[in-house]
Image (cartoon, rainbow, N blue to C red):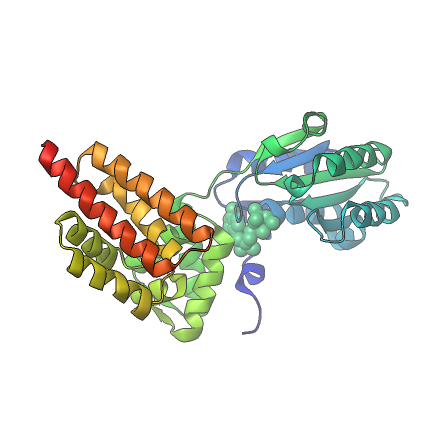
Length: 321
Ligand SMILES: Nc1ncnc2c1ncn2[C@@H]1O[C@H](COP(=O)(O)OP(=O)(O)O)[C@@H](O)[C@H]1O
Ligand SMILES: [Mg+2]
């Protein structure tokens, strides 16, 4: 497949990092001062945390950035001791530029409390020579004493307009055709995770340079809202057989998993034109079914039972009207 597009299209300049203007301007100020505290980057996956830290070190050290940058993953299965050893040997020597070295620790919130205590001591030990950038999804999972030693930066989900610009740029460069509908759909199924989005785009392009909505669905293994909607409409109309056939079609022909379908239904419920009580009951049923699937119970049985429960909920709400 050649080069990964997430690397090929990784932002290389501050100006290329979309949707994080507030964060970027504060980081640019550190480069200007040639000084910075420990940093904490928090936010969901694929919002630019790793990308920004690489831009930062490149701006600080130019060609010599690799000697001054250590990237580690906290959820390294060999444990915090390995992480600490790596930090120690990297941090032992000063940067030749007389500046600090930078240690980027990805998924810092995967560390246990004990491991975080160890990390905190390590950070203190090397404050003279190093700055840490801790990257995490949830800042609340990081011990308070660590948080208070860091300047915290919150990365927002990249908004739709910016995501579409990113897609258009890649499409142009790779000679792809994508309709507005395909782009919107890809944005929806990626959940705002830019890495996921670019990976799906690359996967789709392998099949066809003309990326249609059907292709996006195929790649995302997500379902067509029309099919799901038809299934639910039939259920709410009390037509079990029709609804069940549509369900089987989604599962057997479109090879969607039970959890995929439940996710799709959950996203759709708030927009259905039914009364709120019924919506609540349906969401509750989805939750129960999802739980049972995770516990390992039979997908077909659970999904059919879910449809049956929609039918009952639909009938009840009609009686009450
Ligand atoms: N804000 C952004 N602007 C442009 N591209 C982005 C942005 N955030 C992520 N990307 C794209 O997604 C890929 C993964 O981003 P990354 O920085 O690793 O995210 P994170 O570390 O937050 O999970 C990047 O290589 C880039 O192609
Ligand atoms: Mg990352």
